[in-house]
Image (tube, rainbow, N blue to C red; front, side, top):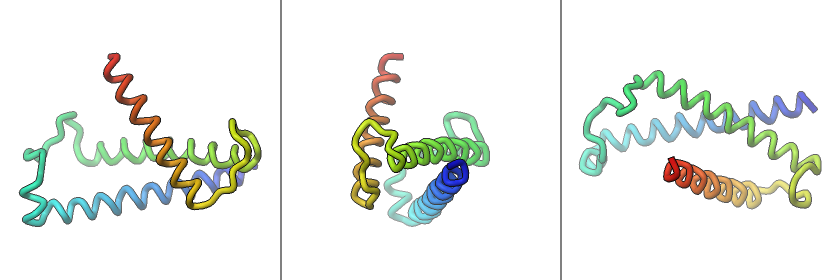
Length: 117
């Protein structure tokens, strides 16, 4: 069970890191075009948080490790019958729907927590 978890966690982490760097590369290329320069919202190159780009990447990679951990726990719990709902067959549809529901719930939590603070 532990080995299955580590393999699942590693697979999710590698996939998320690949998506992170792939989208970062794509967006940096788009921002370097004329179209990207016209539509840029933030003109200055420094971040508001004061963190350097490498520090921001480290924080993002650490956050992705946490997200991958939770995904691995959720998927393995569901596959072993430890879930709130009956065991779902893991297909692309259930993965995408689950991801969309997770994002919606996280965004709602994030919005209301920051509104409350």
